[in-house]
Structure formats: structure tokens, C-alpha cells
Length: 452
Figure (cartoon, rainbow, N blue to C red):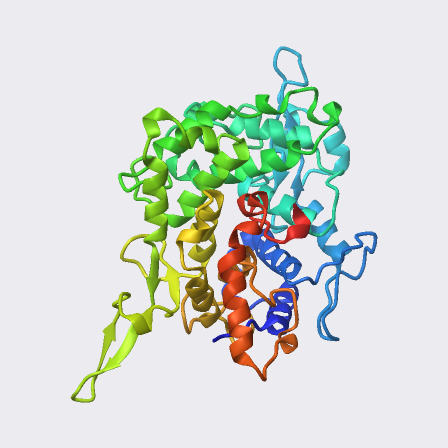
């Protein structure tokens, strides 16, 4: 059986925070998401400090691993966009546009602090036309700041929440990009369907939840009740409109069901507090069973090589053969697609939120994910692939969801002299404890228990 290589993963993610291969240059506009993958994974690995008063050292694992918490926090805050107040009939509290975070610091010139103090409509012309916030980047910024122990006290909550309010369309979906001008009307963007799918619905609702769930200070949200910032009913209806004939959710209405969009939709319903109500509706009777069935059927055993009588080899994927019952089995994102490590979390997490994790083979999924473990640290998309940050993070997220034994311990601590005992203990732990991690952690995509 494969063992979890903790120290190699620590070095992979900490090194990636300092430098990346040239192949990542095309992702520069989304650099914040790459930082998010690294920081969240290091948190899962137990390398971030419990004492957040330490502004410098963020955790060490040997002399070659060092992370500077203060620098990362300040860099993220530096990506915050300056909101423009939307004034309606002289009411300057009507809302804002442009509040949130962008993905990288490649843009300029950016409005100065002095300009921000004189915030009015005329300033939009002095801003770079592409200096706008993005819902997904705002989401990863807040998640990363929380993982680094920041209390979000420097966040202009009302500016971000009122920006979200202005980005929600009449059909309940959300536009991904926030404009820089107060003259923008989201109702005019009816054709921008690709920028209004369930990914951005999920990011918007997660941002709303993070900024409102633990906020007791009415002044912080400008005396607006939290439910006034988004239309929960229309958001719920949009998610349901994405249901495919198979029971899964597509990115937009009419599209094929997909593991990633299914997680986004179900997690959004959970964060909105309506998941149980939706699943119990008379008009949706049977949908939960269809959805669970679709998710469970996405797990596929790896092809097994069988030697023919003439010496050749063929693939055998008969999952009913007894000797193959313990074969590694990954998750595919859609029917007839190849297994992919990221769907371990997206589909496994969906089942977790539906209280149905016990219906999949957690042990076989664990084995598949660990087969994709790279000798350089990190995880590849499929067996034998080079590691990348996205698939490495979601592999780590699944292993945390399944309470992988050793995910926060050194691999040297395992009893190498008695692999049979080790395998038995891990097998038992994976199968019995998948459902113990907080569903809120799973829904927010922050799988380290410290970030609840």
C-alpha cells in the first residue's frame, strides 16, 4: 500500500510559494489562487502556527522550509481593490461597486489612498480599466487570510457585500467581474452566460458566508441585514435550474452534469442554509437519491493488466472479480471520462455534504490519490502525471476529508517493520471516520480543522 509522504509535500508547497516553473506564467493573473493552494495545503500539513501573534515565522519543517506569514498577509491586502460608492438620490450608503480582490499585482496605475479618501464617480476615469475585483479571487483571498490567522478586521465588509449584491442577476446567478464604474448595470449583461455559472455562484455565497456568519457588529455591514445582500430564493432557484436529467448539476442550465459544478451547487445550498429544505421538497422527491447515485457511480477502478496465454496483455476492469475488490478506484468528473484526483474532493465532498460518504469506497479512493503522489512532492492529475498545485491541493483536501492517517504526521512515525498492522489501522480509520470532519469546512473548501 502507498504511504503518505508528508515532508516531500511540505517542501513542494513551501518551495512553490517562493518560485514556480515557467509553465505557470500563463496563470499570473490568478496568482492569488496559486498562493491559496499552497497556504491551505501547508495548513492541512500542520505547518502554519497556532499562535498567530508571530508575524514572521509561519512554521518550519526542517531547515529548508520557511514561510513568512506577514509578507503573505500584506501582499494579499495589497491586492484589494478600492470600491467606488454608488450614490442613489444622494444616498451614499446605497452600495458600492468594485469591492473585493484581484488575482495579482500586474496592473497599474492603481488609485492612491488619497484618491480613495475622495471616493466619487469621477475617480473611475483615473483607474485602470482592468483594475476590478473578481468573485473567485475575493473568495481565495478571504480563505487564505483566515488560514494565516488574520481576523479580517481590515476588510471593508460592506463594500464587498454590496458589490456582491450588485453583481447578482435577476435569475439568481452572479457576474464574476466587478466593474470600476457606477454606471454599470448587471441587468444589461444578459448574454454573459459563461461568466455567470455555478463556480461564481459558489464563490459569491462563500464570500457572503465568511463575511456575515460571525459578524456581530451591525456597523460593519452598514446596518443591512445579511440576507439583504443576496437574494437567497433566486440563487436557490438558479442552482436548481442547473439540474441535469442525470440528477447532477451542470455549470449553467441545460449543460451536462459535472462533478465540479455539482459540488459548487450543493455547497452553495448548504452555506445558504437551505440544503435540507430543498432536498425535502415534494416537487424534488427522488432527486437526492438520483444525485447520490450519480456521485457514487463516478468511482471507477483502475484498469488491471492481465497476461494472455500468448504473452500479450489486456486491460481488465471487472470490478466484480473478488481479487480486484481492493483495487484503487478514482473519481471521474463525468461519465466515460478518465479518473482525476481533483474529483476525489469535489464528488467526495458532495457525498459528505449529503451525509452519504459511506456509500463510496473511501479506502480505494485513498489508494488512487496516493498512487498519483509524485516523488517530488505534490500530486498529479492522473497516475504518472507531473504534480501541479490545483490537483495537489484537492488531493490534500480529500485526504483530510477522509482523515488520512499521517496527513499531519511525519511518515517516519509509521511502523515500517509491520506494514500489515499499519495497513489495517489506516483501512479502519478511513472507512470509519470520513463523516467526522465538519461539513462547514468541506463546504467552504477549507479542509484544515483550524480554519472553521
